[in-house]
Image 1 (cartoon, helix red, strand yellow):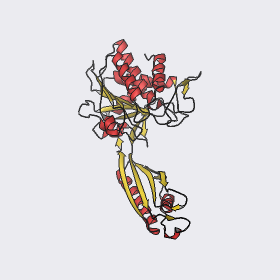
Image 2 (tube, one colour):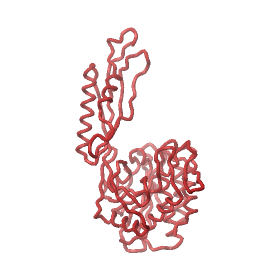
Image 3 (cartoon, rainbow, N blue to C red):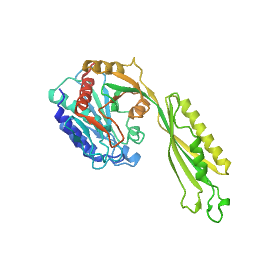
Image 4 (cartoon, rainbow, N blue to C red):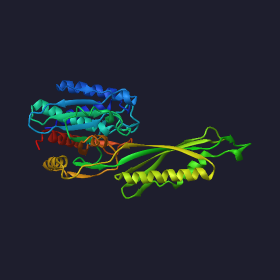
Length: 371
């Protein structure tokens, strides 16, 4: 029942709108106008004020016509950079790419278009459906900054299908890790590099040694870590007094996150002390781990709908974070559904017409389900 050409046009129009994190206004207004055409009332919250962005999360409740528990269908409105002047190029074989200078934005506009097309099919055919809650979030790409400021008191659903996963449609992530970010500042002592170098304390050297010792990559079972940013120094003729490193640790086990953070701090402190420097550090849990088990209605329903479509219905753990990490902290279980996106966060990102259709059909089946 999916209208392939219509969904393609929805996707192309959304892609053409600039929607970097913290400035999703154009996409938000486009979705508002589309929901209005469907007769769906919506509200926009004040998340943008909390995160210094231009836009809030968009929420809508659609009354059901069958007796079933409500479900949340969610996707995010922001895209990663480079995200300006995007356009979707449809190739003869059905593959859809950008022009190679920007991301495509299928992460997560494929999710948005799939949900909107499914709603359109329900509307135009007057199909009986369960109660639905629609949540279109901002700043997901910046560690789920927008969804944290949802009004959870108004949500009626206890299950969410977050359409925001790469991979083959018909698969979904059932668990994701805690993601902790940290910053360590190395405090040295400035001195003239030509006349007085021996009296300086080289902060960059201490930081550089620490980075070589901090474990990165797949460092333990179910644990990954990385140092992603290092910055410091002001001029080539000055012994640098300051240097800062920024990194992250991911794990499904919070005790392992804590242990690895302690290891990082110990390494940094030791490297600083060797040359007479000191450190200051801070850390923040960006998102907490979640896990949805196979015996939940969320998984059983997903697998049944996929089976009816001839899809695998496979669920698996992912090391990526999503809005479901935050929703789960408010008692909402669910899955992060693969949504016709590939090579995400790169200029080689792509989707296909067929995969977009399947994603929309899966959204529709879930919306029409009564179990």
